[in-house]
Picture 1: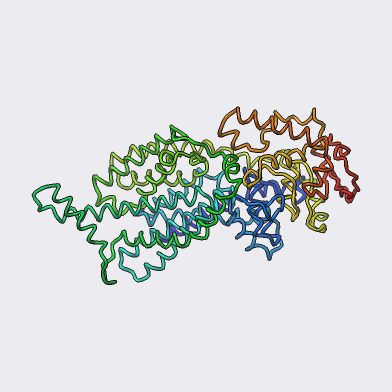
Picture 2: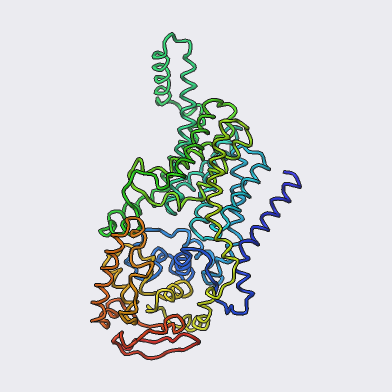
Length: 575
């Protein structure tokens, strides 16, 4: 590795780390900042709460990090969140502070993993460097999104690197190949315990890679019988050779390339057995169907996005056609070709199983990697056939870059960014209190879950927990109790009890959601004290700055004031 290349890599790593930290620093330098770290990306609240649970010594509760009930089952295992919380527990930091540290670490590791993978995929180092940099620039907004997609994509990349490195070592007949086989299998198995979009892409990538290698080996057997007078006879002889290959024999058999991939797959399944068992156990839960409904899974065999499906079809067809037309020239770049084909099949997998589950929106890192590979194949090999795929890839990357324009908003310091800063004075009181369940408004509840050890009554992300629709609605209505019915504006609230299902199934589900909420809230208003006791609420936090119209008399329980600060009052419910 040349000095110039090393310097370029190090320089970009430093620049990327600074770019990731600057939104936070810009807010910290503002005089309105009082110590409450501000989230800068969507869904950050759920990851903060899960990591905070692990930081406070309850990693087993990370999958359900809000209401604190040990009997509730989360549909997401939160393996990454548990690991991060356990790793940083000794520091005494809050989850938001841990994320600030990781903001300058994980994106750099993602960049380095991309660079290493593209090099292993056969591309020259400057081409690989350019591809990794373009990926990071286009995905700058999502690189600031913790856990999924950032950490989960990094784990997926490590798995692809280990598998590809095993194939490269096998080509060199290196005795260390089995270490890479073990690493690849272990990471593929571990991914099953992470997020669906990462492990399914990685396993599909492995399967297509295995199919490529096995097909090439079988086609080679076919050509060994080219002296046969008939194509039918040649096919029969080739098939016989393949079946004969699987006969019982001594351990001194000669290994083929596809054998290595097969070993990785078998060992990966064994490594994944604990997580497979968890998935099966969860699928037999009596509330599993309700959890699936709230997740937004919907039956369909049509593409989620016709434009993106067409673009990736062009990329996949051109890459496959080039591989068939000139296999010798394309063989060194097979991992890249496999990545492109995996992206197309992954985003259209509903054609096979008939279920759509955010394959496009939740896998943009993997799809962007495939698009970068398509461009690099065209730039490296300069084949006319691949140029069409490169054009399609550039269109996709341009669209993703345009969608990522919201990264500019992270660099803007707005008044609304400091809405929770007055709660900084609340944190010492929460730290001193024993673990309790606190009722507050929805945004303040998210703050409590993300910055303290305490449990809350409701979060939008309870949609990922196996509870009944009725319980979820009751918990939501507890948050509505201090608000007069004519001021609740149920119809205007963006998120109620199953927002993903409403988005997936259309306006009829949204209307039903509003009807259920209004009915349950009317019933809760009539017996507020019993509702509070049923869900074991011990404290009430009134964020007077955010909810000045709250009427605590509507709770129908006696309260005693424990603490008061600028814009907030903490009460205890007297039993």
